[in-house]
Every structure is written in C-alpha cells, then in structure tokens.
Image (tube, rainbow, N blue to C red):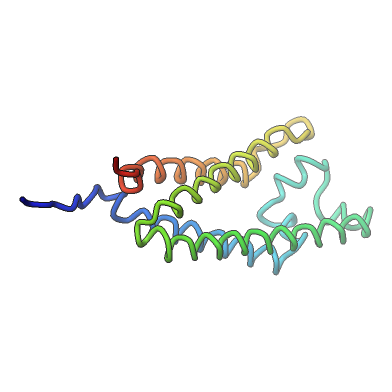
Length: 162
C-alpha cells in the first residue's frame, strides 16, 4: 500500500512566509510609532489627524500642548502594541505555522478580526467634511484581504482529518 503525502498548493507550502512578512511589517510600524510618537501626524498620517481634528499636528500642538503630549504618549503606546503583535505573530509563524500546526492557523484568525475592528473604528469615527481617506484605512483593508486570503487558501493544510 502506497502512502502519498500531499504537497499542497503554493500558498499551503508558503503560508507561514506570508505571515512572517506581515509580522515584520507590523514590527516596523510599531517601532516607527514608538520612535515618532505624535509627530507621525505631521508626516505620513496628516490625512488621518486633520480629517478628525480639523487642524494640522503643529496647529494642535501649539493650541493645546497638554493634549498633544497625551496623543504623543498614546501613539507611542499603540506602537508598543503593534510591535508586540508583530513579534508574537512572528513567533507563531515560525514555531507553529512553519511546522503545520493547526492551533497556529486558528490563532492567526485573530489578525483579520483585529484588522476588521481597526478599519471599522476608522470608518465610524466622525471626520470633518471633505476629509480624505486615511492611510491606515487603506493599509488595513489591504492587510485584511491578504490575511483572509492566506487563511482561506491554506485551509486544506490545517483541516483535521477524519
């Protein structure tokens, strides 16, 4: 009797690498937010900040330095969270998904849940009239599509055999 181990499609063989890349991106985003703090709103996140507050980061800092310090602290804290999520996800990718362990695949479904929540929160946040689409809304949606797609296309690799 011959036994053949199914090799799987391209995604099934390399899904863990997709997760490593996403994890590293989150580590880099987190490290950037930790380093930049609120000043991130003066550069790459101007659409987000001005779309919600109606002013630039510099105007906000000048008008209310205490609130600006609080926002700076919260951005850095959020950066620590992204860094931690990235590192934790990286460990799950390398030590779980690479070895084909189902628990790791099931755990990675937290990614789309997190991303969906983040995008939804941005969508329902009240903005000033004419505000543009913030970068996190775009990147969050792209990451959401990638994560759900990767999980769905690698399903056969992790399904339990009956």
